[in-house]
Amino acid sequence: MGQVSVVFQPYGKRVRASKDDNILGIAREAGINIRSICGGKGSCGKCRVIIRKGEIDFRYTPKEELLTKEELSQGYALACLTRCKSDCEVLIPPESRIEGQKILSDAVIPDIRVDPAVRKLFISSKQLHGQSYKQLVKSFQLLTKAPSISSVVDSKLKSIAGRCREEGATLTVGLREPKILDIEVGNTSERNFGLAIDVGTTKITVYLVDLTTGKIVGTGSDYNRQLMYGEDLVSRIGYTVDREEGIKNMQRAVIETTNNLVERLTSDHGVEASWITNVCVAGNTVMTYFFSGKDASSLLEPNIQIPRQPVTTDARRIGLRVNPEAEVYCLPCVSRFLGGDAIGDVLLSRMYESPKISLLLDIGTNVEAILGSQGWFLSTTAAAGPAFEGWGIRFGMRSVGGAIDHVKIDPVTLKASYTIIGGARPRGICGSGLIDVMSEMFRNGILDSLGKVNQKLDSPHVRRGEEWYEYVVVPASETDICKDIVITEKDVLNLIDSKAAACSAISVIMKKMNLSVHDVANVYVCGAFANYMDLNSAMAIGLLPEFPKAQMKFLGNGSVAGAYLTLISQEQRKKAGEIASLMAYFDLLKDADFMDEYTAAYMFPGKRELFPTWWEASRKR
Image (tube, rainbow, N blue to C red; front, side):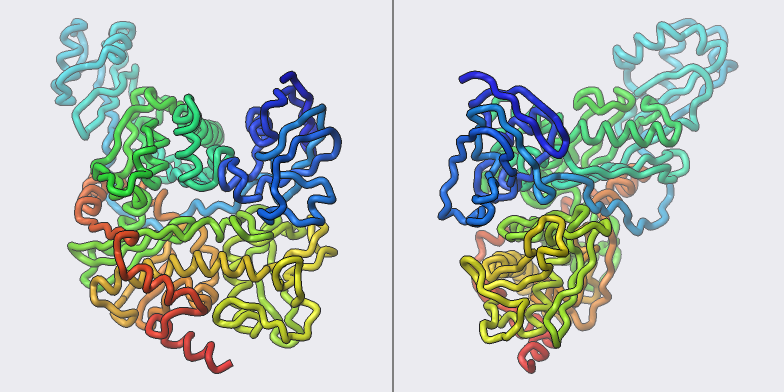
């Protein structure tokens, strides 16, 4: 159908593209990232763009209510549903840009004995003096107990055998199954580094680690480039199914993100990529499959059994730019929704050492709940949905610059005060801010227990919107988007849906073990989202049950911590396997109690027995 020229602002980038391609696809090819939670299916409404010039074909039905009448009149369109019929100029507004995210890269990591799965062994020239090539090979095999030498290492040894006899040699040895990974001339035994990687759906965090001392040399984080293919896992799997090169593109995106972080870390800390000899990866099951290049489409089948062994490969095979022979170890997964990141959380918490009942929670798009103590674990997951990431929320967004992350409402004036990530003018509200604003609206009588706005309030901050009643969090004059940032009744209902799923998942596994909130001694909360949320706000709306006798502990990024622990300790790697084998997984979708608990949680805060203090307090207003 011919070519058109498309200019993307504010970047000033001009590209040529086919008239058949939608704007979202054109932007992806140009390396410009636009928000798209649904992966370009036209259902989330987050890929908003403004058409400044040109003629377009915008296939949108107003009844879908993804854009307001005002936005349509201002030239807004959804990039995934829009094709350019002529040369166009497209503005990507701030709320649609994927930019630097507020990323949690830290965790409280315990001290453990350093015993990595890859070591370097120096052999002096005295030991090698006078040996022929065949004798060198035999000596190396005897010293390392390696049954053979790979063709790659053999070829390298042939070229440096003479220098090894004169200067000595350092062998890089994989200990899991004795294997010589590399041979270097001279004593390079202290140049042994590894990577601990948290492969998250949204972001990737990398630790560069000295494997001799266990010291974390540097850390780096960035958003996962797979976001351009969809912000939720089902959308990404759908992309791999629908496109011939889908699996390769998905793996390439996550590996490129990782390689860029590794390049930055090695450059900053004077480490050569070839010195990185071992890599440990933790992520949910889908991300583990994508990272290792496996087809994840089978994970959409409800009855699939997931092998509980760790996935292992080598760096060369997946395109990771470190030592090509470096072993890549992925923490074992338990089910299609419970992956190595959860095993990392348990390792970090050490809940497996205590006889007391502990509950571990990782709250995000999926809620992971693990109940247990010494010798047993019962786990489940619930699809809380991406509402706390912005899907279905009029002004919801990720935790990037310009996102409101905390809110307080004056009980007299009902005016909101707030804090903003990065100190810029607000563009929207991220997950922790959404929890705060719902809690504050409920506590101050703006919302009733069913999430309905009190229409009798006489306040300039509460009003009737186009379709729903709404609360004005920030007036247009204070925002970066020149629009009032509001929370509508529809937003609240979507958020209640998410919080009900989270709370009911916890309630069901406690019910299966005949436990009450009074029986839990420790609650461990992991993950970036949970780390930034206000615990009181979360309990006030019923996202988390109230545990009167429990110690609440925020662990930070348990996924990268688990990867780190298994990187520096063979014992921790063994323990990860034991945890995965002990972990019983309970599928909520097959349980009659889940719908009962979910229905009961569809109010503020929820069932009375789960909220002994908050329930009474909320009824005394």
